Image 1 (cartoon, rainbow, N blue to C red):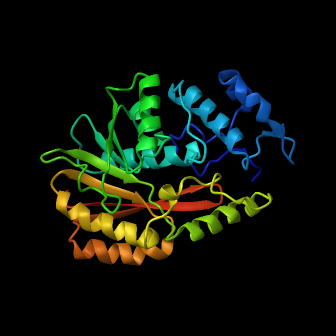
Image 2 (image 1 turned 180 degrees about the vertical axis):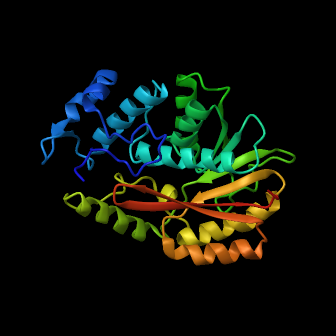
Length: 297
């Protein structure tokens, strides 16, 4: 498939299934124009190895499709691809529709919301969900608050600081508080060295010289957790049992399919009532998220 062409593998409600309409996006966000060039196929595109170009594209997409007019992130913070983030939210909406009817309004907890705040922005603007974003990084939360304030979203999105980097839900879900669902894009590297190696693989995949810094892939705390993804998700699952009555669905992306057997064993140990694995894809990239609940259907 040619780059930027139809991404029919995306969720049917994903607004980015038809690819990027750069002529419209440039009209929406004129600063994007300086980065748009013809690719090897003669189609309009950008250099996806250029963080400034990707940020300008995200600004245009968020403005055009989600009404987010103010969005920026500090240098070296994760600049996520919008279509894939939207897919996760749409499949979560399907999960709620297919299960017992959730209470209104839907309340979503975003673990590791980051400086970009993309999941709450999409969830609140497309589905009207009430969102709480959590992060251990105060600078990231400060930037996310600027996005909230700049778009007048104080009634839809709020933020909380996680004071304990080793904890997931402890310290941020308040006593008696209820959430419909949680979502998370977990750190998947076990060390800064592994994160750097992953970043360099991304650069090579884009045909670029290896970068010496993590500015392509995000801050270390967005990418690294002692023990990697497996340890993070094991902690998440064990902690979720403590809040079994306060949240209907717990969910998380799983980057490495090889971690799924461990996840299923851990969920069995904590006696999750229902476990669903939802596959997702964008072009040739395959991903998935796992959802579990302790509440009967």
